[in-house]
Amino acid sequence: MRILLITKVFPNAMNPGQAPFNRRQFAALSRYCDIDVFATIPWFPGASRFSKWSIADNAPREEVIEGLPVRHPRFLYLPKVAPYLNGPLYAASMLFELARHHPAPDVIVGSFAYPDGFAAVCLAELLGVPAVVKVHGSDIDVLSQQPAVRPALEWGLRRATRVVAVSKQLAEGVHALGVPRDRIDVVMNGVDRAMFRPRDRGEARAALGRAADRRTLLYVGHLLRDKGALDAIAAFERVAAAHPDIDLVLVGSGADEQACRAAAERLGSRVLLTGRLPHDQVARWVAACDALVLPSHHEGTPNVVIESIASGRRVVATRVGGIPDVLSSPELGELVSPGDLRALSQAMVRAAYAPYDPERIAAISGCKGWDESARAFYNAILAARGERPLPAIVEKRPVLQLDGQPPPSTRWAPPPASRRFPEVAVSQA
Image (tube, rainbow, N blue to C red; front, side, top):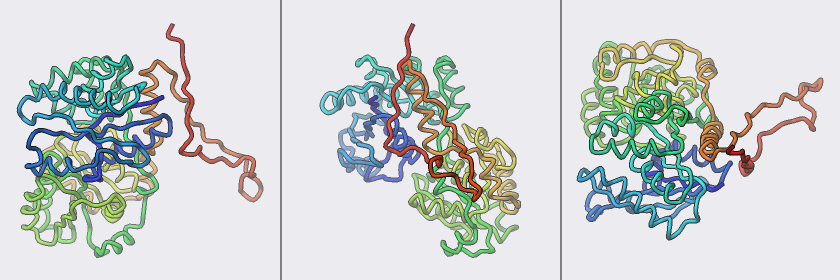
């Protein structure tokens, strides 16, 4: 099976840290089928004169990312002028790209409801193949509230063969937009369990040059008001004087970074902004912290929450999007209402001092790896084609010899990454 993935939510050489969740999931998905990625970049006349758009426009036309062949086609975009035209313009741009360079796919997947999912549905209908739309969060929670966009967004979702949501809450949002529940699949994001696992907090702090006796609250993500970065600083400011042994660290960058730095200056060395970091360094900061803080105003299912509890670190977050699905037990963390700085500050203090067993947090988190997430995604694609899902993986339990080791003939290892699973056809009768 050949799948074409269309999304603007994907990394490129100029922004390698963007959307690691899509990069990881799509790379794992390529173990089951052949994948081509159109990681699109918006373009409009004069875009190079604006720093926000010029950086991405310098991305190469083609590159290989985690073994995936990735093209970066430009699509005509009219920012803030006529948002209802962005879907049709996106689809027209991708049709031109597909006609020039690409073999016909068996399924087209649009990752983000609008304009990506809308374009995927348009192309799929022209080619006579199924369309799958993956929704992330703001594409449903925010864009659906915009009158200029909502009709096109609804059209695309309703005509998609299947819709994949990253949380139950998003699935309900998709259903509210007119998609029958039997065409919606919930596929949670995965986590790199080799990188995000319980580690010694003291060793991680020493590696980062942090004092062992300081308590650390950690924010990881884009430095945006909607992500709650400024709320995290404001809530910390309320309790900093009364708790001089707690520090706040913010990892990431974004449009509101200067506002965050200005707010952090009032607290001196108690607040550290590291800027954007590679994934392995993020994992080290997660290992070093006492708890993660993510006071978002709206979300899908943020991977940093999954990564934190997989690392055995508790979380303070807002009761939005798919976060309650992940923090399903009070042992895993505490939920507050978005924008409630009083409740947030109190929860941050409790999280800084509460004793807990990291190994138990990781054990009860139920976090799945990226291969399991990709397998569920692939099953949704198979359903779009009217095919049977892959059989469930059953871990073999070989009989142990007296020395406690399985005999060589019964030792089991997972299949190699290059293995292709067969397509299983079913009758349409």
